[in-house]
Image 1: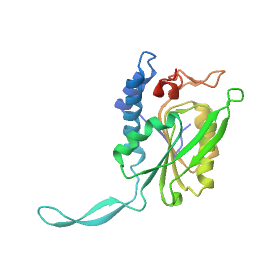
Image 2: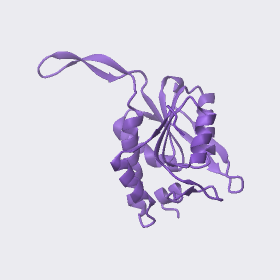
Image 3: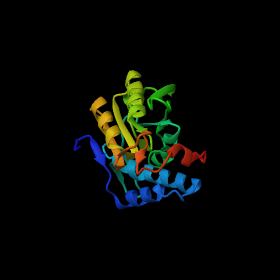
Image 4: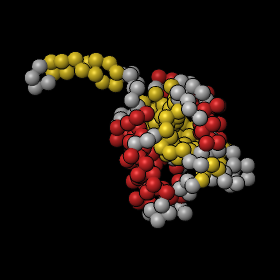
Length: 211
């Protein structure tokens, strides 16, 4: 499944925190903090290619030219609702980023996404866009969210998830071969209910305490 646009994280801190997420005994507060921390750690890698420009700064010693992020910077777009859990980690790295929202829910019968909301910062076409969702299962929600962003003019898009199933990753990279995909851990497979195995259960329920 090697692909130049797919990045499977191998950092020990990320892997350690994902193992803590998997534990069914991890409570809501700790789970929420772990998702935020993983979002920040993965965001560090995902944003490594942000464009820079030189500006003049006066230090206590002298004036110098030094790099800052160029252009209109960044848009973070969580897929509601679980994707919200990763946003604060990325904003800790880039506090001036704008935040959009895409609302999708999975039909319990077909397991396919149903759209109900889309609000993106303007001008979206000038931004690097990071779409967040902790779980990439069938790939349906991610594919639909990215399609919606492209229909609104988004161009440079990255997708970031904590856990992915091979089926969902294959579907996403096939449907949108132009985007970068950042994965915390690639799990074994989907079960008959389209849940990731071994996974960590329902990320949204565990983040918001609605189990």
